[in-house]
Length: 300
Image 1 (cartoon, rainbow, N blue to C red):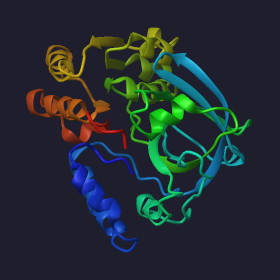
Image 2 (image 1 turned 30 degrees about the vertical axis):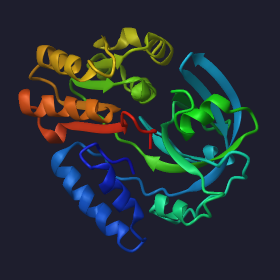
Image 3 (image 1 turned 180 degrees about the vertical axis):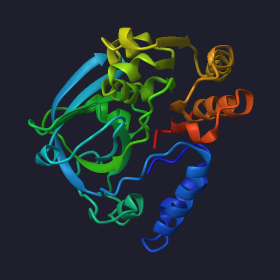
Image 4 (image 1 turned 90 degrees about the vertical axis):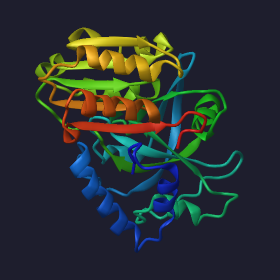
């Protein structure tokens, strides 16, 4: 599962290292904590794992790749909102070896695979899903060859075989005024959410993009912009992003806000939540937040 940034990296590693007997107990305890401290949907109970084939690769922007993945299983499953999944990437030059689909602790299952064949898992959002064709598209923001996910996106070609691990969603449907805050890595999830909203909900939705790359916004959120309550672009780099987001939230969030979804670099997501809760009085349970990656580390 995706853990919010309040869980330290060491804690995440500890949870992921637990055996199959203890893991469900820890996850249930975490879910109970999360329900008291943030907005969370029901966890996914779909643990299926299957191979998928890259059928198309498109360079949408200098730092944005769009991949099309095919599998017969995509004609059977349903996806919704910011549906996210584990992309299992085999080591360079090795065949794909997948863990057992019945394992709920996917990282422990991966750790049991011989190191030479062990896939890396990176989490991505389904941009679009064509059930009839058995395909999904995925937008992948790249940062050079800084990690397995970015390297795979840059080097991917039709015919490559990788793995798909079903995961779940983090967005909760909400009828009132809502705020979606994202950095470039979370903009594909914002697109998926906004595209599936009805007209009334979309018109009550404000998207805040904290970015240093306008191409990502223009390519990921194209025709949807005019139907939103607002699209705010905060130009910021790593040194200024947190302060600029805080300033915008304090100056613009109103009392009628009913839900906030904040997904971005770990410290940015935590800053956004902290500002809403401590300075603006928003209830914790009306906020979903998640650190997609951490500065200085490959995205997990």
